[in-house]
Image 1 (cartoon, rainbow, N blue to C red):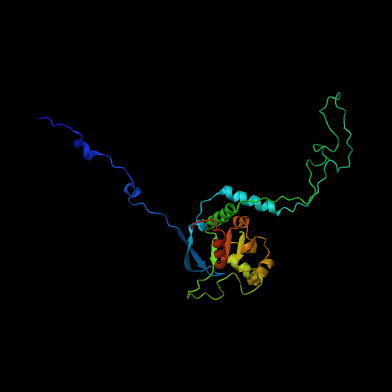
Image 2: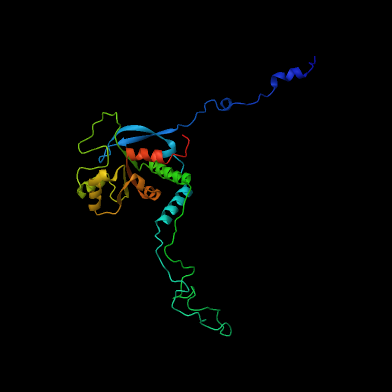
Length: 267
């Protein structure tokens, strides 16, 4: 016995329009927006608490092109532009051609001031002062700071020194919640780098107030190594963060970085 197939027979097989992502990926979740950073005591680097930091500051993707542009801009701005290379009009030679134009079998040459000569003048010589400075959009430069900090955080080279205001943690003897040390002798720095096995690494100390770490500054100046530097938070450049293999930054300075370089980011 045959059954008549009508349009109403296929009404149950109509394809429904997918309007929600949750129907396709029922277990999908949004990635976390924050990472955990450890607060440490100095100089033992003993951890005592953690606090959340937005991923935009410590977990931004690596952008080598942005870091390159920031480093080039900083190096351009360091150029003094005080050189006065002699131009063709400033050189001591005359304007007479060294050889006649034709008949010698040699290539055509100009006068002795030509830049192709060994003792010739400089082509397009400039007179001081020369301004070699360049600029970047603020959003791009801020992204370079966040990228550099994120790279240091992922590599485990970022150490945040401080203490929570409501914390009751007691530090070990000789430790503190800032980068200041109890003596200005270089022996303290020698013990610090040897105990953490970082003798051959570039160390960067970022402080909230440059004058509050007088002992640390004097001890580093007396220490026989050029791989250690102390900078106030406003003086730190992207190149300093990239060059450093260990970064020790005070909590207040880190908060300043978070406020200063996320101005154009919607958190």
